[in-house]
Length: 146
Length: 380
Image (cartoon, rainbow over all chains, first blue to last red; front, top):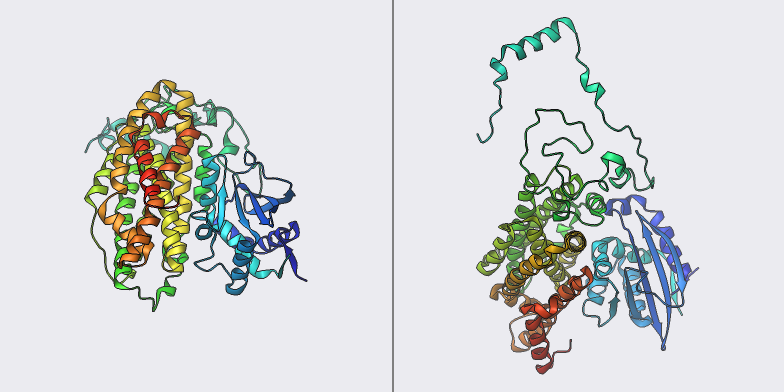
């Protein structure tokens, strides 16, 4: 059954996929970061906080708003951009060279990285491969878009 | 030979007699068993993570208790061991904690160890089979890789040369610096391999950047080196790696840049936490750090604007040498250059040096660059 994006169920499904491949994520190393995901649609937004620890996604929750002082950074984007990224991942098994997070977010034209502390911002890049591989797990989940 | 043993043991009759006596009689001394050291039993705080250096932060073995000025150990005795008379002076240059320490140093090392990767086996080199970039783009990519190989060779030497100079009580810092040297050696390997797989061979070395890099290598103090290397140079290079990933012509290049940026961001993290630690614990160094930054910003500005680097970026960003390619390339490269400077000042402000902008000539250059970009219609 398709899982709706965005939703906590979607991120829980990726968490399950991550746990099912412990060696892959162990090989990528510790990932200790808490970040936000903001999906905008028609002037509104749904916000999620993802808390990673050691090799796993420890916790995910939906929040009314993302407090940038309580996360390392947040990835913001319109639902159209998120959908294009996830559909690209679904087609290719992983993001192609035009749809990886750094490319989409680099100049803030598609996705945007927002942060309070540059040290937190740099954590996106410290754990980039793990975060990219986490989103690439979307290829293993049937996703529907609201 | 710079150091000779104070005794010629092979010709010392008492030493040789004792060696033979022990073999003959089995009579043991066992005085080392009475070492007056602390008995502890560390445990993993998190079993998934394993036994970390932070778990060993206990009593006389811990890093929390290391004093600002380490006077009691100048040997290679491990922190917490009994130090008998007769250990040689290892002559560390740096025995002051705030000169090297960073908040969470031990975590940066643990992260470094788990996030190591292998250029030979983790990069899908086979995907380059049959990939032929146009001559202009191929040469520009090779020039970028040639420049980055040069950068990473000095970035390997620079932290490594400080290792024997640090007091052995700073175990966690030394471990992090050793891991950094390995990271930089791996980056050298990655960029050299990618330069040669373009099919265009290596391009040209960069005098401007070598001058900048020599400044890092020849720093007078660890803090000066760290400010120039971890905070300024690697901060700029982190932005450059993200930009290079964005511009990468193949998914192989994308993967290389995603992996190197992880290591680079970790080094910048250490640099920021060290800078904060110095400002909080050695406040009289603030003026010295400003002086380091004056010089580091001067050379980083010159290095980033070096012709052989800038032109390669303009070609990669614009996709070629036609007029419209160059115009587009200049727009994108200008945005990148200004972003590098903006992020540099953001980091300094968050580390506790907000006044830097008022003093910095680089900040004046940043403002001039923003004005020029806006006048040229470049959307920032």
